[in-house]
Image (cartoon, rainbow over all chains, first blue to last red; front, side, top):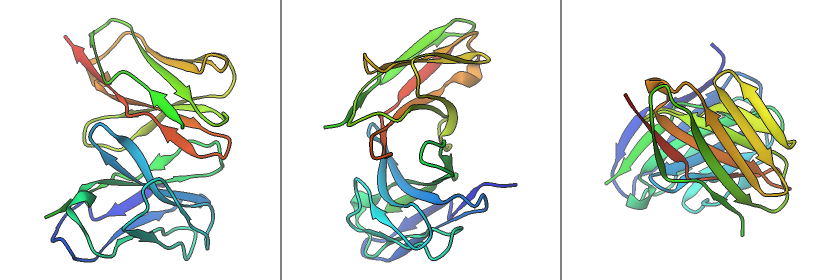
Length: 112
Length: 109
């Protein structure tokens, strides 16, 4: 079934630890995105990639890094987790600029 | 700055009609999206409007007025499964999506 797969589904992480959230899509979409969703704040863009080999910063990039080595994979890394990074993280992809986003099922991350 | 406003929460009765409003102020406009998000799940696409007017898709319709910076999502014949959050998002002149905080819709029997 075509779509986006995120892993892990949930994670409890000690502050200061490094963590990589994985995201893979099989729709050959050019653009991929990482969002965090916090209660009352809606979706906030962390980083994005318009095509393989390029990445850009979103609204809240500090403390996060991404890479886009190929079309399918777009991992998000927290180099040294802090409690304020406790959130639900969604990976998404789209075909063209004005195409709807397809979302993964999300990763619920708790930093203690 | 760029801004999307939606009511935080709405309540409606099963079988009724509800209208969820969205007003926006953005740098340019390249379309407006509505997404549905059930609790604990990912958002899913509902509709896309780029021209003024009403787009109908079954029980759901979406309206856009670019001159007023206004859209609404109309849900007819409400069912319990329509209980969810509804997210409004605008594509600005740089093709960046600006998201509203979402409207939580509660359906009562």
